[in-house]
Image (tube, rainbow, N blue to C red; front, side, top):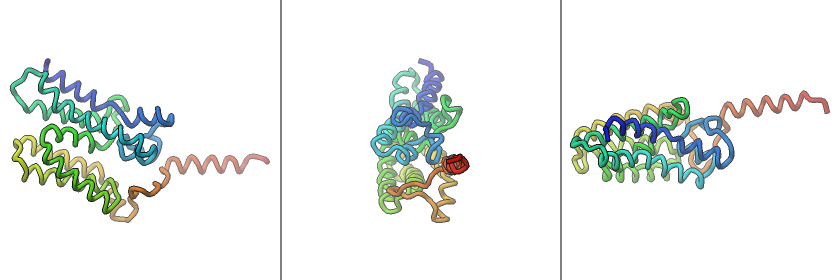
Length: 221
């Protein structure tokens, strides 16, 4: 099969919005209108709970793992670097979903799946840091940023993967940090949501609720 067709297939697979589907099936809602508005496992957990978020996270991880691991077996190409292209396309699909008008998640779980196929030791180190940071700080955003930085360090220090894998790791880590820039601001201001605490209502939801209350107050008894 043509590697370019598999790149397209990787993007289309990465674009599948598991969190959106979960929101529709579990509660009939569009997750883009609730919580942070992000189509990722973290917002799914925040709005719908762990039982719904867990399979979403697994699916998002597999969206990255499957193209990077299996597609090279089907492309009939001797160049292993196509695996990088497939993984990168899946991540782009998750972040800019074709089915969601190019909106999506921040790509952390899908990127973890890609590197689980390409550099599993580095992912193991990053996952341990993610768990420790989440346990100590109870902020998923901070844990994700620290895990991304750890992934880069592990790629440089563990197993000596090819330079192309390291470069992709640096690019993905930089994107993860950039995607969480708003979270960094909230962390510095002490306003970031902590795991285990009820999240504040999304501003749009608060506005709608306030407008509904005002309308009710104007209605005659």
